[in-house]
Each structure stands twice: as C-alpha cells, then as structure tokens.
Length: 327
Ligand code: AMP
Ligand code: TRP
Image (cartoon, rainbow, N blue to C red; front, top):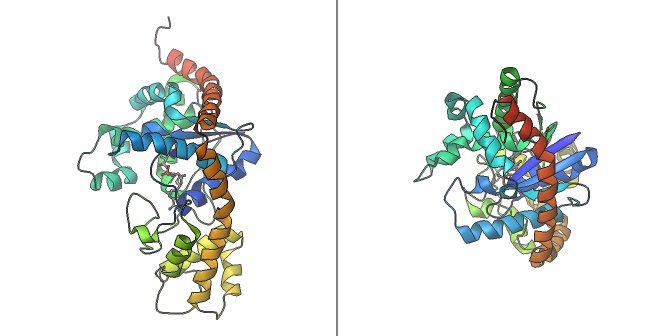
C-alpha cells in the first residue's frame, strides 16, 4: 500500500500538526510504502520571506525525522527537488474546473486576510492533487481541514481516468478518530494554527516545557465544572479532552470517567504535563537533527532521488495519454 502526505514548510509546527499529521505519519509508516513531502512550493502561495522558507524547510525535515519517520523505510523529500510536481500541477489544472477551486473553503479563509491574493493560492489544491496522484497513492493521512482537498483530488483522478484512460489510483483520505481538529486553547472555536489566532492558545512542538504548562493552565474553559465532551456547549473542555485522548491514547469516555468530579484545575494541569512528557524526546531529537544541516541535506538528497524514481513513470503516462509528442 502506498501512503502519501505533505506538510507545509511554514511557521513552527503545532500540537494540531502533531495530532492530525506527524502522529498519523509515524503510524501509517508501519502499513506500507510511505512518502512524506515537505511542500515548499505550497509555502510561497501566501506572503513569506525567502530566508524564512529556507529555515522552515530544514525545520520541517527535522521534525518529520524527530517524530519517528525512518529515512531508511520511508521516502522523505522536498517538493521543489522533484520537478514532476510542478509539471503535474499544470497538466492537472486542465481537468480541474474554476468552479471547483472557487468552492474551496481554505482558499476563502486564507484569501480573506491577504492583502495580495496570489493565483497560486487559488490553484494550490491542484498542486496538492498532483503531489498525491504522482505516487499512485492509496491513502492520505491528514487532519480534517484537508478533507475538501482530498475529495477534490479524488474527483480530479476520476475525471482524468475517464477522459484519458485509467492512469491514477483514486486515493482515500485517512483522518484520526480523535484530534483531527485541534482548536486554539484561547479561542476554541478556531483551529490551532500559527498563522492566525491568539498565540497564547497555540502549542508549538518546540515550546519550552514551562511555556506549554502555562498555556494549558490559562486555557479557556466554561463556567461549569464537569469534564464532559460536548463540543457545542463546552468547546474549550472538549478540546482539552481530545488533546488528552491523543496524547494518552485513551478514549474521551475514559478521560471523562477519570476526571469525574475533580474540577478543571487538575485536569488542565494534567493535560499540560502529558503534552510536556510527550514532546520532551521529540524536542531533543529535533534539536540534534536541526543542528546537523549537512546531515539533513544528505537525507533530503536521497529522498529526492527516490521520489523522482517513484513519480517519473506516472508523469510519463500522463504526458503520453494527453497526446504530447515525446522527444
Ligand atoms: P500544514 O502545516 O498546514 O501543512 O498541516 C500539516 C498537517 O497537519 C495536515 O495534515 C493538516 O491537516 C494537519 N493539521 C494542521 N492543523 C491542525 C489542527 N489544528 N488539528 C489537526 N490537524 C491539523
Ligand atoms: N495542503 C496541505 C496542508 O495545508 C499540505 C499538502 C500539500 C498535502 N500537498 C499534500 C497534504 C499532499 C497531503 C497530501 O496541510
């Protein structure tokens, strides 16, 4: 089975990325041939600094390895190192409609707070579809915010297959049962993300232990005192229950039972401590990996070679089926 996922090279990665992304990547790696891509071509669709992109790309690679991706077993590479991605995006843009792209909620959300809305931000889902389809992917582990993009990828694959003959595996999105939408601890109606929202409510994987503890201690809750999972009535507490569920590997029901009658203070403290414990070894590995830039580049170089070899046959079939003359 082929597994593919992509993670943007931007900002510091969060507990949300861990929950919807890294945690699943490491788990799915056990199930087949996994390919993980640092999608730097996606990172330039909104305002960015070139030096920042450079740093974020290396940090993104280090975080994949630090959270358990094994470079011997899985392919880890940087999107801009494999030209097939940009080419596939152009070819696939002709089987994607303007109307489909216009319906993407991530485009609507992201374009709303940009002064300059790039054409790349609009066509971003086509690039993502190419990322996935080039590898004949069976499953795509992602957080819930990517569901619409994965569905569009399936539609694009089916349309291409219908028009030009069977070319692509039609991939399935895989979303975690718990923790597919981790919210900002200060604004539990909003997804946890470094690009928007109160930073005090965003847990970065690289945050110092005391910073993590403090952010949990000050997390917004409600005026009751019952630790109960009810996202509509109790969004703050429900988010904390989901986080605890992800970190401790326990069901929300088991967590509710454990904190029956104990009030919010102890619960918030325990969730914070559990996250600190989970992140401590990841932070240590991350620092070591990040300090060895040569080593990271070497790993990315090997990953790019493997990714080129894995994607080339599909791109070749696409080009042939679409009627281009080959040299
Ligand atoms: P990004 O950093 O936006 O490329 O996201 C990488 C992965 O993390 C994607 O699979 C996202 O769906 C996932 N992700 C991002 N934010 C969250 C969140 N708040 N909760 C759960 N998953 C998330
Ligand atoms: N769009 C994804 C995000 O914002 C990142 C991404 C790019 C991706 N290409 C992908 C995810 C391919 C899964 C598969 O998080």
